[in-house]
View: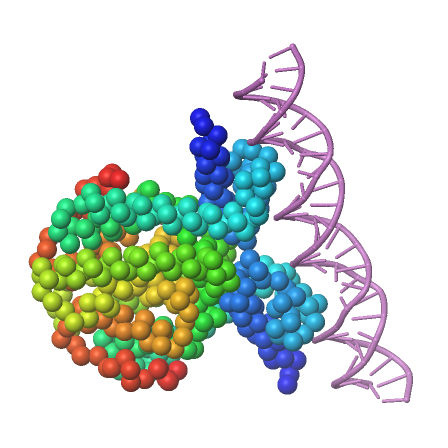
Length: 212
Length: 212
DNA sequence: CAGTTCACTGAATGACCTTTCAATCAATAA
DNA sequence: TTATTGATTGAAAGGTCATTCAGTGAACTG
């Protein structure tokens, strides 16, 4: 493996260990030594690859955010052409194992909660939310052209956005098992069905979003 | 003032300082000395009234939870008799200054994020959610009797529950100004209106829930 | 007024953790 | 093989912080 790729690989390994430790011990219980132990390396390594603990956390958030945005783009590209289909694809992704695993959800909620104290966290979290909200608006505008207009579209798009966020918190509280994630997805689908009774979506049971 | 009341008063003062510090510095930045400074007392006092930092945090969560539950009971009692009215009253409360101030929201999100690492936090947070969800279910069942049945009632009640949670996270990220709280409330109202188009609710602009 | 109680103070203690860095080791090049 | 480079290790330094506790003083009590 070329040197550069090896460095990237180790950084990723440490970031993933960081996420695991946050999930297990919370952000207040996160220690550099634990991250290193989970990654199976000496604790000096962490400060070799990351300038400081703070930088490690910032890079961890960046990793989560970039991974989410990449997966969302892929899911949209892979979904059917209708706006309702695309909405359902995004919902499926939001509760998929890849994006909404136990560890990732714990890390996201940790960053949200610290975001008022850490402007860098705040900016990145807000950027992700902005992008997701814009996507919801666009898709719902299209979906409502298909099924009949409403004047409170932006509010209903914000509701979808925040519904997903709230369900993530619920998964954090109750444990993001596969069954719990399916149930969360059903809640979102019920919301979409309430808005678009005409458009019949796929069955939630069917696929655990194997795509992407 | 009788001794017992004075003790309770000081404990409350320290708990409120704790909430303020969490809002400003996050849970990771919370130091006993800061709590004491905000409360305007010497730092030794904190360990005099609370066995430990952990106990201070547990009592802080208990304070938040009890305050919320009490306010919810009052809001329900003060609201009109119809289920839709009561739903709107609860929504108004959830984005009121009393319950959803900047500091309280920051504290709640902090406890949520630490709840996987701290079983005591988790239990209390889940208990609040359980109660709120049960209330949403009951009120929506009644509302749907008034306006027409649906089979996915439990999912739609869960959606309301989690929508509120998600909006709190949004307020945490973007700042819980009065205007932002009103907007969040509008999102909830839009959701309710989408479900119950017949039942006309009050105008959101009208009152900032002065009741309770 | 002397005695007692008790909230309160802040210096001292000791645990814990991040960060630094000299030494070691492995891989590659010469 | 030997030299060089750069990753890795973990001991040590330095700082931060929760917690303890002896002492202070204010408010009651008899």
